[in-house]
Amino acid sequence: MTDADTPADEPATDEFPAAEEEVEGTLIEAPDAADADEAPAENETVEIVKTVVYALLIALVLRILIFQPYTIPSSSMRPNLMIGDYVVVSKFSYGYSKNSIPFSPPLFKGRLFAATPKRGDVIVFKTPAAGHKDLIKRLIGLPGDTIQVTNGALTINGVALPRVADGLAEGDNGACPNGATPMRYWETNPVGRRYITYDCGMGDLDNTPVYLVPEGHYFFMGDNRDNSLDSRVSAESGGVGYVPAENLVGKAETVMVSWKEGSNILKPWTWLNLRWNRFFHSLRD
Image 1: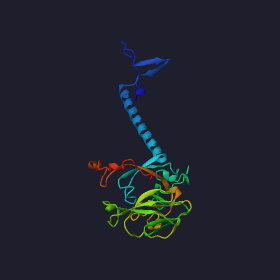
Image 2: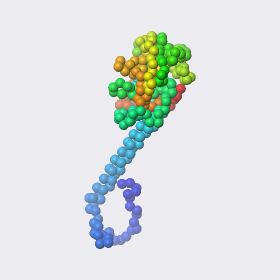
Image 3: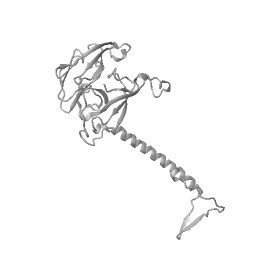
Image 4: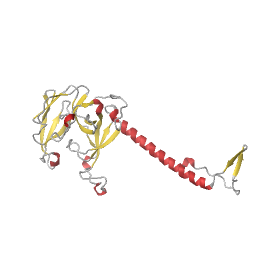
């Protein structure tokens, strides 16, 4: 029973209350003792159910309209995103589509309150292929852009992006599929945003044809260039291909918490295996 249901204190009296009381000719019966015991329990159950329903509705609204958390499960965005990072994604940055809603119900087409993403944003999107998995990559190409990779270096609209070597990423051998120690490169995109990429040596995706990004689509790549199936690989071949604007879910803003690899919610003794230096790490390079 809530405080609002608790009757106010009544003045003390020496008389016992009558079992029945007549009000304007209508007979009002006092409840049985058993009924009086059951009523508070029923009210408590109803209040608990209402509270849970309200909490779920609020969480759903926040998840659809404001922010959604994601855990990073792979190495494709290393070193900027690590396995075990807990990332907050803003859902309002690019407006809303059916993919902003869990299970992507076909309620409407296109985007509401659409805003154009900026080159270099780290974005969560739904894969165009069947299954519509959530992936997170860096936005490289806008509609109408030409993209090519030559000897590991990225070219956008015929201009090679500045790429400065920054030594080996010692201790990060797990980032490369071949077990090599990756080379760090600072890459600067056409709007001046700088970020680190990994190069694990020459691979199949280090030399590509020229891609022409269709209207209404975007081109994504992982920062760990040799360990990312991204827009360089078509959806039919198991990659991402060109991503429709409708498939954008939101912009990755911040790493709130980061657990070291091997941590598991089912293993309480691993819960404190944290990367403290990545708490509240901003992704707005």
